[in-house]
Length: 622
Image (cartoon, rainbow, N blue to C red; front, side):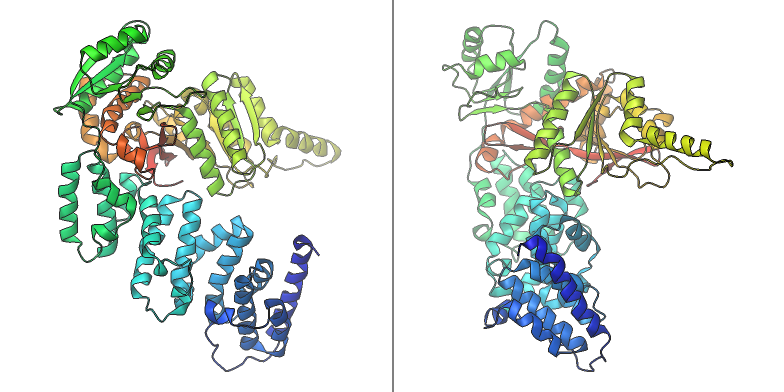
């Protein structure tokens, strides 16, 4: 019998057993504690042999026996049986049973990939509702799941809460220490997972975790912040860490911190005395190059590196000659794709270089070649990951018919399929009329209106009925410019029937504009989008933003983004070597949380923002 056929049978059998139990007189005895994994392993009978024996008990003792079978089934990896039993025990009238059932229920959900049920369980379960002996393992499994799903904030919060239970765990507690998957048996595993998740958080997210922070939590959050504040500055980093050790000597020493933390203090970063900047200072891209140049100069400030600007509108041979003459130790640029491809393929190009564009798909980069671009594909990947986390199954991607939007649409579809889903419905529009028709066809409100009219014509009295919109769409991902977005959102709002659930709408940074009227803000309420921190005026960038506004108040939004790119390019130089060796190292830039992948490309993780109550608000996680 296959699992799919067996599952309903199991649920019926367990449900029937519990139903008969509910009619039995209640036992006055206190329920015994659930068996530990070690005790379960000593059982001679299998879970399926133990299951029918539960019929020999009544009331609370019967529920306890079923709980015992569920834990035995998990130990035997008979997760379907464990799911059937623990799912039914959710309804047990006995509080102690419900508490002891939380962990096997979580384990069964994880093993059988019950995504919707998992999210509901984790979101609605207070730790006090879990049996005390199971709380550490419950937190550990929850944290691992959040981390796998890319919910870095939730994973970090859970792991920081877990430390209390690890510290209070005594060696004789076999429920924890005899399980190889538990962090109490391997503190290094716990710390590595915690550090990887903390490294993915923005500065504001780290600050949000500091509320009422006890010593252990404060130690890790401060370590995460100083490691990124002084990345690429070995002397300042060492001084900051020495201060950290003095303050938190009871928490950890350098020797027992994760390898990725210890290596931060041993790697020597790039510290070039001269940096050559290759930008197209003439021609139609001169204005774009100038915006990047302003950002580079702002980032360099009074630093020790001398900047040498070279016009990139020359042959690779001429560029090589000028960079050599400048005695540069590091190169930033070129910007234009054809120049990037030419320089990166030159065998004579030996300088460590941060190119300001994407890598050619057929090119294997040299060890010291890095690629930094404001890639829209990064946003599409981030949105696909969010939809996966939210367990959306039927998203729709709607894009304008321009090259960038269509490229993002294709990348989202590809990433969504890589995550194990079928290709989502993808639609395009050219103008307002097409957009309005597209929405009507998508939500099938036009068909519903026709049905209402047809029925009204058949009835003598007037039919009072609202057109209904389809309910199988989880979310909409819109790839359009600000004007198109302001047309789209109200169309959706009036097309979704009042009785239908709110349809979440997401967008990219292409939809965002800093020059919105109060009417625009009202029309966009409910829209969530990705955006670089620089364009959201995040608190950590306020001083620089004020200086920028005084000097460049007339720059449009494209040039503002390029300014941020130039700023980050200089700041990245000092961290690239660490990021190359430590994939978990993340640089907090104006353009996003910046990490380095295996082919030398900078990957951006943008901030989230949403229009709520007629105003724009940065949010931690949508």
